[in-house]
Image (cartoon, rainbow, N blue to C red; front, side):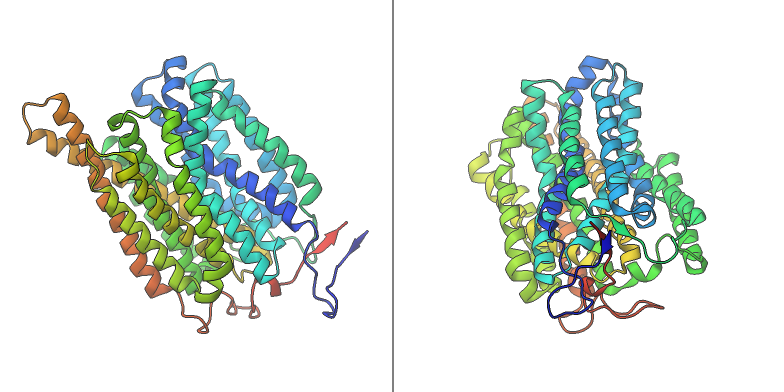
Length: 510
């Protein structure tokens, strides 16, 4: 039996789903699993390399196989949730991600591990945008929606640091394989929760069709983009594979946009991303993603190679940052964003992150964690906690329900592309800085090599600060002021929405 629940005194206005907070817990688990996977596996790589016997040159493919599949299939994964239903797509994503993780954990060869990582990326591309779309369509009351997105944003920002902590613990006390098996445990809990707490929707009207040419174009474009930046990280910017794939990505993206303007059933309707507030939110997520890699990657290097921290102590070192991020996310969503809006909060967070990066540039070989590293991590944590919830909430605000999945996928695409760009650029710049330092300090001793490493990290922090400073300026210019329109303005051919909760609500199947 199907029925529409209505709130008292509001005829035809759907009441909030009674299971919504349990749904948030399930979605949070899925998001945590996807986000922490990017760093938890990195911690396990040295142990996996020793066990399976692959080379340093092959090692990058454990990370690249995942990012290529994940990045290129995100928009398709988001659109699938619009086409076949959020609950069904969510469960498929969870089962597939768990299965791929189990295959990776049981891998006996390099090829098996790479194949499992690619499968993980493919199902992650289905799971990540669907989780956000479930959240977007479940929380319809503005105040509760803000609170839910505060939790989601905190997980999105802190998941990488949690992965460092969990990865260090599992690798040191168990086996590198448990960095993959842990996903199976999380997924089983999330699958049970999804079956009971994520509601099914009875579709009204004809089923929308998949834009096959658009899907092929954008998947090829995103594959080329991620591969180009990944290749730049290993072979340099002058490599034909680097600039060839980046050029192909640019051409394919232009063709994709032209096709979306005339497609009868576009994969990504252009009005979704051309709204000024949503465009600002997607840009902010991408820039924050690029800068975040400077925090996790190079601070991890510094703690382990310069300060000689163990993997688990390195993970523990990020806990204060996680705590500050969660605190900032809750303050932002419950107090600051409702009062000031993203035009104030996102630039504020970007500015704090810039300051945190500048503090990191002062680190030396004789620095100490408590006096020198910790203050920077606390500032960065509060900055990221101010950026992510406001950006993610704005990125999905006011989108028509039938496009909630693909709009959510754009958030993940921004994070993935931003992370790929940040990793490639910062690694290349850091490597060049180390080479230049060593060339100017001959003969090279162990002390000089240590100084060169710290100098290279500082170079990465300076450019990371530049990313965040650019993000602060861009978000000030792009986000609308309060009361001057927003992401909920009318889309072409559609009606204006006062908020996401004013969209047509689903019929809940009880």
